[in-house]
Image 1 (cartoon, rainbow, N blue to C red):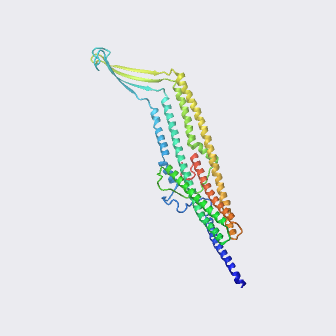
Image 2: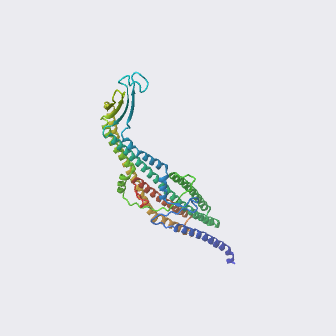
Image 3: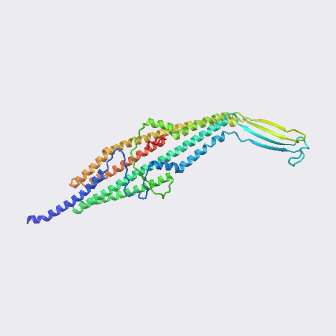
Length: 459
């Protein structure tokens, strides 16, 4: 009878234990599958979340987008046309001024054209041509200065091209990061749903409390908010890429290809050397110095006179007089040197000093940016290694151990939830650091002209 009387409490106890064990067995299976199936190796592999980019047209490679930007981006097109325009100037300014043709007709005693030949020996009809000749060397210097201007425009085009390509790369890498973290958030959202179910099961069985259930529901709602914010960031990044590619905003969204961790095979000194040779800002400033030197030479030649040569043929009455032939040579003398030529030379020297200072400014600026991006690439690589080999495995192991401890009632729900959130945040920080490193490498490419993301394509 005692056994029968005690049967009902024992039955309820075992029923609760069985329900509790089944719920956490499902939870543990999902946790192992979610965090154990993805091994972080030496390369970063991004798999977009299922259901994302459903309206895209397949994976698009980064190199295809860079080529499209080079062909279609309006900023690049404007810089290219500016360069093409500047290349047409040297031949114009290095050519002699157009000759001037003159027709003269002089009458004596009659206002009618071609009248009066028989009335006066001074009546005539004449044809002439004149040509200005700048002082020797001026035209050549003007042509060389125009060539330097064209070189500066070329560097501005190169700078615009690299800036747009770096922008495309940064947006592409951010889109890859967002795609990966969206997949993580959605997968972890399902796991958190299992945690919520387990908390609910424990609460209904009388083994848990309502606070655990409410906390699980709150964290799941926060996760949904974060997923929504990620979708918003994806939309903004898609819009940015389309702008850089000159696509309509209603065009299909892009889907990034796999993102691999790119090696950095150069030292900082090698990057600095490459930037001094290939950076368009530094090169453009150096071309400006060359132009300023030529401007000084031209200003000095303006102290010397320019010339004019004129030839005239005059026809009087052909029955009585022979034709006249006149050759004239004139000189334009710079007599206002203190008010014109001397200030021009002073201006040219000041421009030269300014150009030299701009070279120093650009060199220091590029060196600063190189150091910043180089350190970012180096330190984020170390961070990725720490995440792969330490933080992520440790956090996952702690979470899985926490699940087992919670199943055996040796750990409270708050500690289990905290370990779950640690794994979630570390996963997101890992991929954010990966995207940050690739963006830094893209900036290094822009500054140095080296090709890091595609070693087969060198400038």
